[in-house]
Image 1 (cartoon, helix red, strand yellow):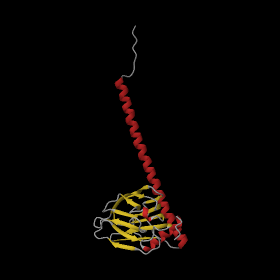
Image 2 (cartoon, rainbow, N blue to C red):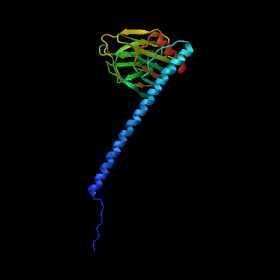
Image 3 (cartoon, helix red, strand yellow):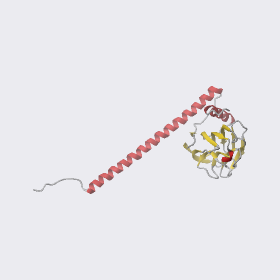
Image 4 (cartoon, rainbow, N blue to C red):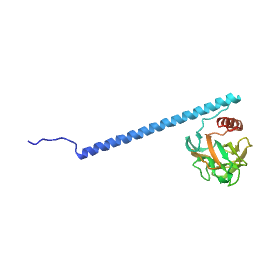
Length: 239
């Protein structure tokens, strides 16, 4: 007498495998989305805490109360970091950079120290050096109407020291400086704003980036001086 054995056909097994694969893919996508949301929330929380810490410490140290937006990024070391919120056609922007110089300006030929990215000839905002063998550090910017512009400081790269560079802009002007030197400014004719999604830090034998701080707002002289003071204390710049 013949016995009948029941089982799955190859087609049925393939269907089960496909269904399992689809469910696994959905689970992985959902997990990655939840993980990314958690990372974004953690970053936003860290930046918000940093903003509050800066305000509290500045008030405690100087008795001055300043108004600050939550920074878009706080980058430490030589790396790339995504902005917590991408900048799209912003009219106001402030970048602070802390970096070490190694008294080797010949190694730095129009080298970028800290920059917002992506950058093009009509969309650039960064701290950089001058030509090879020059001892200058510069705040470079470009807009759709003004390409390849430099605001220059001399005698920054010819020492072994730590410095703070900054550049801030609104819809009509851009101002930059290094350490406690006087501001250098320029007008922004027909300014249409910048668009950036990340911050990049570079190094070579002439300099090493330490930190970067980016705000989606213009910092007036009083605010800048307090943030520079805070950065000096935070990173032992000695200003």
